Length: 600
Image (cartoon, rainbow, N blue to C red):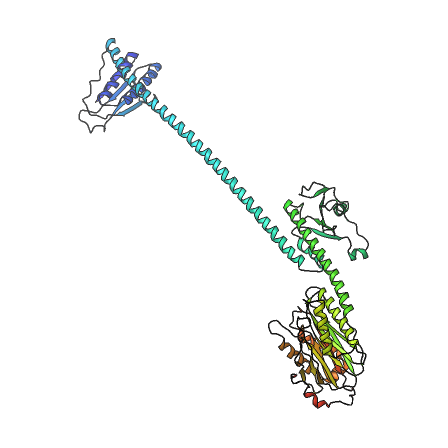
C-alpha cells in the first residue's frame, strides 16, 4: 500500500512527517529509528520548501499479512510533483526502515486542523524526548566507559612505563654484567700473562738472557718498543753512552715511574712529564727497576697504540718489579758462581810428574746450583819418595762442602809428611773429621805407589771401590773389605790392602757421580766403568792418558742428569817402566793379594 502527499506548504510537510511517524510506529519501528526517520524526512522537506515548488512524498508500506514480521521494509520517497521526464530534475530522495512487526496500517491521513496538528507535533516531541532520554542514557554509558577506558589507558601507560623501566634496568644490568665479565676476562688475561712472564724471567740465572727476553714478552701486546737501561752494564761501559729520555733519568733519580707525553697519562702511581725531546711524538713510560738498595736501571716502553690502559700500566709496573728481582738474583748468582769457580780452581791440584807413572784427572761440577762441590782428588809425594793419590767425597754440596773438602786435603797432606800407609792416613782423617765436624761425613780412597815396587797399596773408607785394568786387558774391582765412612761416631782402624802392579796397569779412582744412577744403583755403573777401561789398549793409555779420561767419561755421562759432581783420577804405569827386584810377572796380575778383589 502506498500513501502520497503533495507538499507545497509547511503545513503539508508537517502532516507528511506526522503521518510517516505514525505508520512507522504502527509497524513497530523502534523509537530511535522512528525519530531518525522523521528527522531525516523533515530536514529534507525543509530543503525542498526552500527550493520552492510542489513536492510529492510517497510512503509505501507492507500490505496486510505480507511476508514475515521484519521481512518487509517501509519505503519513503520524495520527488518533485511535476517531473519533466527528461531526467534533468534533481534525483529522488529515498529512505527506508525495516518493520519488525506485521500490523494493520493506519489510513495515513492527518487532520488538517491546528489542534490535531499540534497534538501530533506534541506526540512527535514525546518521541523526540524519549529518544533524547535514551541518548542521555547512552551518553552516560559512553561517559562511564570513557572513564573506564581512561583508567585502563592510565593503567596501560603505567604498565608500559614500568615495563620500560624494567627493560631499561635489565639492559643496564646486562651492560654492567658484560662490562664486569669483560673486566674479569681482562684481569684474568693480565694475571695469566704476568704469571707466564714471571716464569720465563725466573727460569734463567743469566741476567743478560733475562734482559733479552723482556722485549719478546712485551712486544707487540703491551708495548711497541722496549729499551732496558742498566746502570752498571758492562756493554754500556764499553760503548759510548747512549742518550736517554729525561723521564728515564727522573725515574732513575726518584725511583717512581714517569709518563712522558703531550697529554696527561692519568696512570695510577705514575708521574706525568712533558714529551721527550728524543721522541716528542710518541708517549713513553719509564719504569725504574727497583731493588732493596737502589734501582738497577730503567725500563722505557712505548705504547702499542695511542696510550696504555690504566690496568695495563699497573701490570707493567708489577712485571718490571719482578724482572728487577730476577735480574738482581741472577747477578747475585753469577757473582757467587764466579767466586765458587775461582775457589774451585784454587782447590784443584796440579798433578805431579812421576817417571814411569802417568796421572790424569777430571772434575765436573754438578749442573745445578753453584759450580762447586765436595768431590776432590789429590796427588803428592811423601818424604820417602812414595806417591800418594787420593780421591774423596764430602757429603753435601756447595760452598760448605768445598771448604770442608779443602780442610781434609790440607790435613791429609800434613799427616802424610810424617809417613804412614793409606790405611793409617784414613784413620787419622776419620778422627780429625769427627772432632772437627761431628755432623759432617766423607768417603775416600788412598792409593800409594812406591818407586821400583811392583805392589800397589790402597785403603778405602766407605768409598766406591777402585778399578784396576791389568796389562792383559782385563779389569778388576778392588772391593776388599773397606772401612766405614770418615767422621761417623765410631772408633775404627782402617786397614791396608795390596795388589800386584805390572807395567801397563791402570788404576781408576772415582766418585759416585760417574757411576751411580738413582733408578739402578751403583753396581751397574761400576761395571760400565770397568768395561770402558777394558776397551782401551795399553799403548793407547801410554800415548794419551788425558784423552782416554775424556773418552771414558763420555759414555758414562751420556744418560746422566749431572745432579752430582763427577771426579775421575787415572793412574797408569807406563808399559816400558822397569820393575824393582821383587817384580811380579804380568801373568800374575790375574790374581790379587786380597781374596775379596773381583775380576771383571
